[in-house]
Amino acid sequence: MQRESMAEAMIPLIGRLYRENNVIANVHGRSLINKSPYDILKAHRFARHIDSCELPLEQTLPLIEILDKLELGPASLDVARLNAAFKASGEADLETFLRTELASIVGRRGEDGRTSTDVVLYGFGRIGRLLARILIEHNGGGHGLRLRAIVVRKGGETDLAKRASLLRRDSVHGPFDGTITIDTENNIIQANGTSIQVIYSDSPSTIDYTAFGITNAIIVDNTGRWRDEEGLSQHLLSKGAARVLLTAPGKGALKNIVYGINHHMIEAGDKIVTAASCTTNAITPVLKVLNDKYGIVHGHVETVHSFTNDQNLTDNFHKGDRRGRSAALNMVIAETGAAKAVAKALPELEGKLTGNSIRVPTPNVSMAILNLTLENGTTKDEVNAFLRDMSLNSDFRKQIDYIDSPEVVSSDFVGYRRAGIVDGLATISTDKNLVLYVWYDNEFGYSCQVVRVMEEMAGVHPLQFPALESSTALIS
Image (cartoon, rainbow, N blue to C red; front, side, top):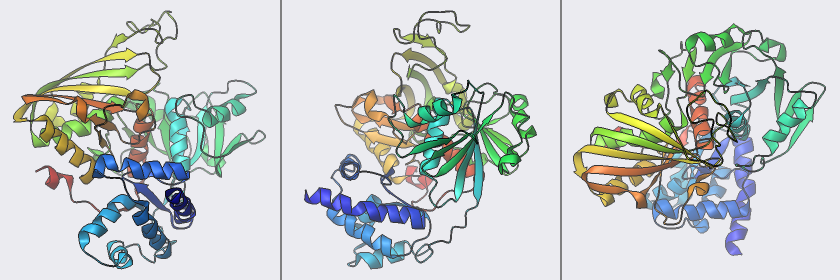
């Protein structure tokens, strides 16, 4: 009861920091915003997977109380790592430590130097609706990315209500955390105060976004209908559209971006970029750190992937091989371009990877099995310790996660925000032969990566504390 009371005391402080200061409080990347007391307790307990012990609320509550007094500017604050840094510093006074550690944002409330960038979701399917949830959650003080509209084909007189209902209810990810209303006269969905204009159109090139007050917008194409520059360039013909982001692997010379790996390649002049695939985002960061540490001679990637909408629910004709067979009843061998796509983000692995995929009858959360031959041998304990450290103390901490529970299964990873989660207990290592199992939420985890790419395109990343050393230095 005492711990529950402390968690309850945190809620208004965390909410005020978010609403008034645009400060996002988290525990090892797990947001504390709009959470119940039990969610906060679970986040503190989760810390034991990373720090080997549960995070004490007796230590984090005073820390958050002081943060609330410092008139902070916008930032993302990891209270678990701030608490650990305070204990390691030898400083006797917590407020003195926090004032020093956060000196660049202390007293800067309301001074958000980031611009606001309009975002339009072209398509409102599985990824589109999850992107909407994340963007609404990140709305904060109105700076950064602003979800302004979705573009869909009208499906009938009740289309608006059905779109809102699909945003409100999700069979996999649960109910929307907040309130949703609709304005049928103006075709608007209101979600937690975010006004989303619903635009009905059959063509990406004929929309006047400026008529809705939308300018210089990033158009996020979730349809997968167009994959090349010619097709995606149609979006740029619409008034108010400035850039395009594809939520799928692109074709031709388009830049396939895996945030955390090659997002620095995005230039101001790039009009069209892609966010690669869910599998590519899940495995590339892990392959990157392994290659830097041990060297990869060659490897095979086998993905055990949840079924998707491009498969048939029951047996019926499908132009793709095997995909006409019932997704709900069968394991289906399918091709994957993830192995080749990795090389677009990590050219040093060009020609070193092969890949295949098995679609299985689960609605979400997939697994990649990395069967690798290394230049330098290692042991299970050594490589697991290394990957655990990368998940906590490197620039890849938003991409790589690590877990070693003997009871986890796929449904436990629904809603995970990191791109890939290494299952340490499943690791097999015999000197230069390494087999890793990497879980990933192929919907939500991927959508978080897409939002990070959007933030990079718009230049609106929040400051993060405590700061980390370069991951390159950590790996070497």
